[in-house]
Length: 89
Image 1 (cartoon, rainbow, N blue to C red):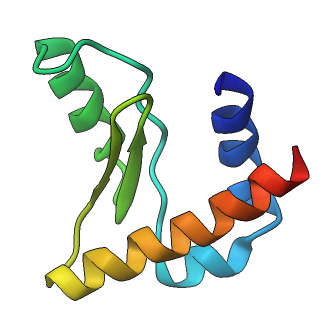
Image 2: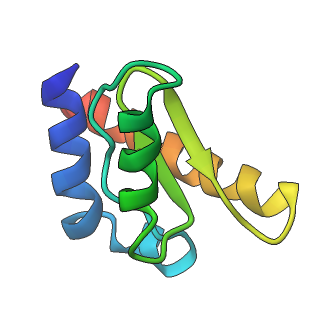
């Protein structure tokens, strides 16, 4: 799993630049205890640089947008790229 997340993060910016045309993916937040202040701080730090979606290791994703439809589109794009990265493994 760690290999997947690091490979995804590496390849998002180099091999799937088209993803960033419509969706800005923030830095992955390492695994931190659910509901903890550390998790809160990790999420806040990841959103310091403007982005539309972040990955929370072992938790899921957080997407932001002007509507639920925008958020859904960001998640769909990330899921599509994630499937391609999994196939690379």
